[in-house]
Image (tube, rainbow, N blue to C red; front, side):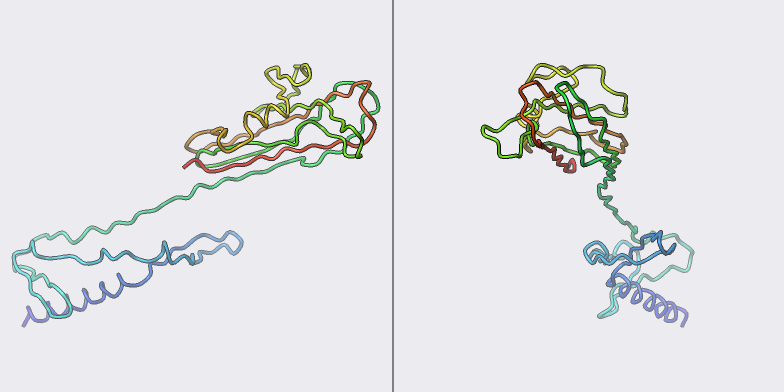
Amino acid sequence: MKKIVLLSMVALFLMGAVAFAATSVPIYSWDASTTSWGVVSNPVIADATSDNTWSTGALSTAVYVPNVGMFMVLPASPTWFKLPTVTWDLHISQWMYISMQYLNYQMHADAPGDYMIDTFTIHAISNGGVYVYMTTGGPLTNVDNTSPTQTIPTWLGYKVDDQTAPSLGLPSNGNNNGFWYDMNWINNNYGTPAQQLTLYQGGYWEHTLHGWFGFRVDYQTAKGDYTTYADIYIQSDP
């Protein structure tokens, strides 16, 4: 009689375990706005896998119940038996926080000379490596429909975690000097995905990039409005 009761209790337990394994496993995420845990609606990662069956064939005594499965018969003398190991795997996505300051500049140059704009900043945090490449509008170009089109020699300089003004003056037209990089040179060397740079490969990192625009107005520069731009593209490091 005791064995029958025991088998009935085990049967109820196992049927409940089978039913539970077939249901979706809820995943909760903390919602700071409501200060509460909420269920994440993602059936791809929330569904349990099919690896929910196990065999008691290694036990000395087992009973098969049709349409239910194997039942272990526990011996009269207390003995430890290991149940199946419960495992779970977690994939952490790569995330990135970016804050950009000073995106649009309006300037007026009243006289010839070398000028520098101080400074745009990009603050970035990520838990993995990042690929980056950049395209620019080239040198500052006249937009007043003058003929021929007028351009102004233009450079971009940058420092990482250092916002002090650069000490190097602008180089000769079209050249670089270790800090200032000609806008056309940037396009030719870092302007496509094939020319990408790896930014802080692997692991957690946090840095602030400070950038300066420099340009040269000479005596022959035509009056009018000039413009250029810089586009930065990022991609996770697989």
